[in-house]
Image (cartoon, rainbow, N blue to C red; front, side):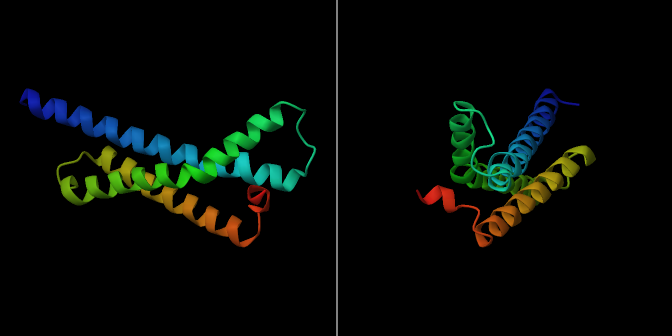
Length: 122
């Protein structure tokens, strides 16, 4: 096996793990930082922590779709262009990334239609 193919395989594995990690953070961050405070009510965290929690919620709502979209796009391109030469484990990681991105998008759409983002307006 040539050195360049070994380096390329390591880069593919690293890309797949990074995309999966970003998608997992977004998919876990939405219920943790947005849906949990909405269902728990106004005064559920002690003062000081609530501000940090709300800031994380804003990041999940504002930057989460961008990060998840880029991770999904990277996985889609990797599967589309190099899917035949990727190892089975890397294909599985990319498919799991696409599944998590779709779950996050569905969760955002459901939260938007349920009026969860009322706190975001002001």
